Length: 102
Image (cartoon, rainbow, N blue to C red; front, side, top):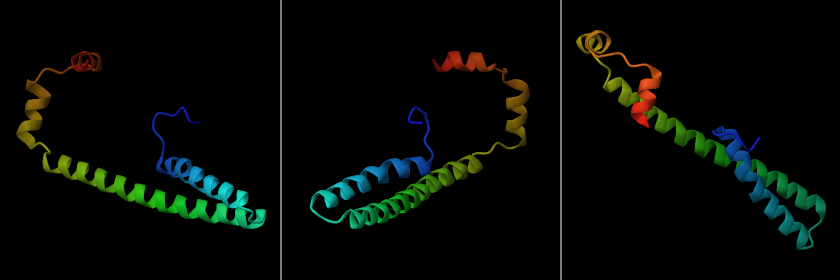
């Protein structure tokens, strides 16, 4: 599960909120608080941290993607440019493009 290359916003939120809540719950339990209060504190803090991180991350990613789509829309080719790209420029295969990038 941790070997995935691209984590979803939900996974990032869980992996970030869990250590925060665990650390707080362990500190509360170690300081002599009853285990019921420590577990309620853990659950509440986990839920709050998860929601805060998830919505912040989701909003951040939405803004970045919106900017990218706006840029793509503004730089969209007209009919003449499309004809040029399709018929005049040489068509490269995926392997040729990969070699150019490397």
